[in-house]
Image (cartoon, rainbow, N blue to C red):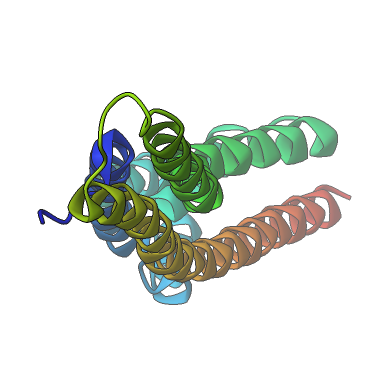
Length: 208
């Protein structure tokens, strides 16, 4: 008797491979996106204090991580109204979050639908068994055939859980990293906006 999960098994196998690819691709991307934002921001502010705005933008462009892009947006809009500046930085933060968050939804969906697909395999397997028994008056059914169809149902159910559980763990790991990055984005945005606001306030006081 050959143990097989039928077509459902192969569908779940493809989903499992896709989930692993998504997980490692996103994990690498999230690691690349992480920097010590406080040290980075301090360096940019030191350059801005010396009047090197173009140099500060060049540093942000060379660093090429989400925090750097958010800081660069703030520097470019520093001459605008406070509301315009805040909206620009918020938009940049949402864009960076959306870019990093892509494919995480696909991973979540795979984890959610895998048990259901496995259950569908169970139904197909037992439907095959029932049909064999119903047709046994016309064609003799061997014990091996019945066990094979029953095993197909059980393998499908097990495969569904074997895919869903690791994928849930993968999603949790990525979501935790993503949430930490979002907090870093917000902290960096608040810091650079606070610096610019203080700078503008000091400049106004000096002009009085």
